[in-house]
Image (cartoon, rainbow, N blue to C red; front, side, top):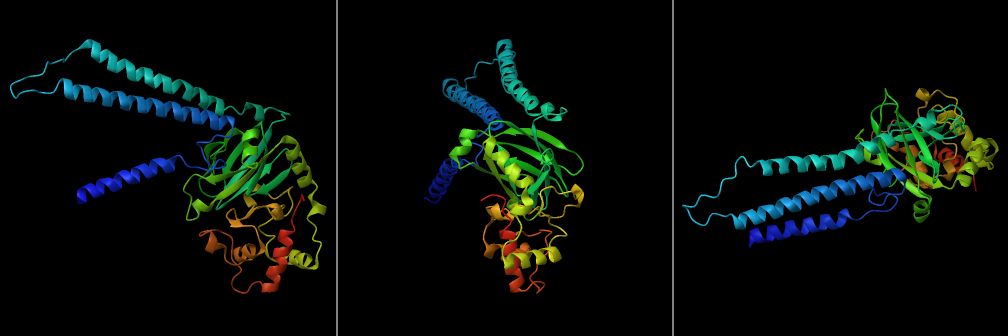
Length: 354
C-alpha cells in the first residue's frame, strides 16, 4: 500500500507539472508569441517537439509489437536472427539523417535571418537602434539617433524591426523578453546585435506592456533584474521621443518640497544618477540608472510598486530588496525623514507626459 501511495503521489505531481506547463501570462510567456522572432522560435519549438514525440511513439510502438510478437515461447526456442540485414540498417541510418535535415534546415535559416542587422548598420538608415547596457542589477537603454538615455523601462514602436546592441558593464548578463523573442547574452568585451519585432495586435491584448528579464545567472539578485517594455504605435513612440527631448521644463520642480528635494538630490545622488535624457557622461562612467522620467514609471528598481513609501524604503535600504546591489543605502542617518520626503517628492515629479 505504501508503494502504491508513492506511485499515486508521483503520478499526481507529474500531472500537475503537465498542467502548470501550459500556464503563462501573455506578456511573459514564450508559448504566447507576440512578434516575428517569437513566432519563428515558437515554430521551431513545435517542430522539434513534434519530431521527438513522434520518434518516441514509433519506438514505443515497435517495442510493444516486438515484445509480444517475437517473445520467446519456450526455453528451447531461438528467435530468428537478423544480423546483417542491409535493408534494416539502411532504414535506421537514413531516417535519423532525414529527421536531422528537417530540423537543421529551418533552424539554420532562422539563425541567419535573426542575425541579419545590416539595415541598422547602413549609413543614414531610418532603422531604430537601441543600445542596451546591463549592470548589477539594472538596465540602461540608449537611443543614439534620438540622443536619449533612459533606464529600467524600454519604450519601442510596434510592427517594425527594432535593432539592439547589447553590452554589459560588469559581469555577463542576458537580455530576454520572453513573449517577443530572445535571449541574447550581454558581454563586457564584445558587442552582440540582434533585432526584435513587437506585434501591434498582440501588444494591445496585453495593454501594450511586456516584461523582460535577465536570463544569465549574474549574482544574488539575478531573479530581480527585471525591466518593463512599453510597445506602442509609431505615433505614440514619436510623441514619447519628443517629450523626452524637451524634458527640461517638464521635470522642473513645482512645489517647495520638490525644490528642496532637488537640492538633496544634487548633494547626495547626482554623482551616480542623471536626470537629463541626453546623457553626455561616457557610457562606462554611468554608475546608476537614468532617472529622467522616473515619475512616469510603474516600478521602483524594477520590482517594487511605484509609490513614495516604497521609494523611501528603497533609498534607505536598497540591499534589503536587491541583495548585492551597488547602490549605497541611507539608513544610518545620512538623510533625515524630512529630507527623504522632499527627495521622494522631487523624484516622483520627474514626469514627461501626463
